[in-house]
Amino acid sequence: MSTEFHWSRKDLLGIAELEPEEITAVLDAAESFQEVSARAIKKVPTLRGQTVVNLFFEASTRTRSSFEIAQKRLSADGLNFSVSGSSLTKGESLVDTALTLQAMAPDLIVIRHAYPGAPQMLARRLAAGVINAGDGAHEHPTQALLDALTIRERKGRLDGLKVAIIGDIEHCRVVRSNIHLLTKMGSEVVVAGPRTMMPAAIAKLGVTVSYDLDEAIADADVIMMLRIQLERQSKMLFPSTREYFRLFGLTRARLQAAKDDVIIMHPGPMNRGVEIASDVADGSDSVILEQVSNGVAIRMAVLYLLAGVRQAVA
Amino acid sequence: MPRIRSLENPLANRRTILDAEQMQRVIRRMAGEIVEKRGGTDDLVLVGIRTRGVPLSEQIRDYIREMEGVELPLGVLDINLYRDDLSTVAQYPEVKESRLPGPIDDQIVVLCDDVLFTGRTIRAALDALIDYGRPRSVRLVVMADRGFRELPIQPDIVGHKISTKRSEMVEVRFEEVDGSCGVDVIETGEGE
Image 1: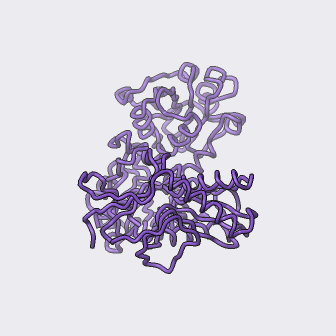
Image 2 (image 1 turned 90 degrees about the vertical axis):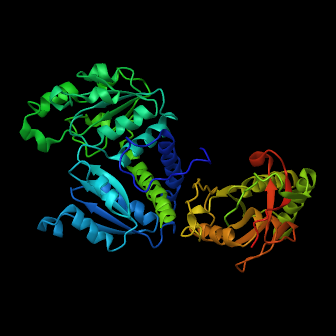
């Protein structure tokens, strides 16, 4: 925990541009914020008077709730701006929406958008700090950070671990951020999934590619199962969910190949019996619910760090 | 509250108020005073304010254990989330964990800090404490009281009262944090 290092970014757009020290700074701060959620009175006055706009162009229950709780615990005023019932469905452009919001003088904007790069564009144009809560399949930095916090808590480190990421590598929004973060921090990453869900150039990110679950999880310290987006099944990426489960579903029997102290992660929402067997999801190796609690702490840390920089700029 | 540690200036004029040995004697005396004022150790909870209130509270606990044979519960408070100057500082401070030893309802909380100056740190600490429960009372123990209060806050037990100028800085050093023990007054030349 270096005392010299200071967070200096106005925005959190992705993991790709972060230095390892910055990642460590967020994780360390989040550890301190965990304590707030354990109190009887789960609130500190730190961001009193600061306004945070939650701008969700895509449906999200978990991520948005997590950001909202984080804002409430820091005493920030959160405003939810979601697609249904807003001018966004009336044809307003993203920039016009953003400029409208800007005129209301928010301090921070949390954005989820289907198009990669939407948060970057807002960050360039707005004085407010921008937090990317998922831009298509590009980046979802707070998810990767909460995953890293969960791993670090359980394993005491990130470097030298073998992490297997299994499932829809192409479409899942959490994959790229996780790969960037884990490889920067010295983990060895293996990705596995059906060929139809494997982007051609994924190995360029410094990961090993496998098309076989058993091979991928051999000696793994961490297994991250990704959600199969059943709503994409119309694209016929795999013949049936039963076949998917047979080839890539994580079961207790297959877990034998991993290390004894392996931990099982899933960003949620889970499809039990498709990518993960129920007894594995609920088993003692599963840290899926810890991921959710850590999500609040990570988002508190990010809000705090960005608000601090925003203050310095103002 | 912002503690400027501009010790790079080798010309800084430093005078020692207490050396390591004197400081130990003072802390032992303060530990005795805590027990004396309470008439024992019942319901006492020690809470050190980060950073240097923590080693002070630990040493007080050790002396009370020595004198009374009782191990008082010990907590740590980080007040950064409660600061009143967050809107003016250039950079938010690094937040570290707060950890209280258990419920503080109906307990007598003994807050420990190294230097009492404006009183703003203590105001923040009181707000933080109240979020954890409702202590029967809160007592304030400081190693050094240097004056210049900006809030109506007074200590119950003081290690050493020091007359200072605004431009001076009081530094309390602990082995665990600073590698040496003692109390110094340093002329920073940055006065108002």
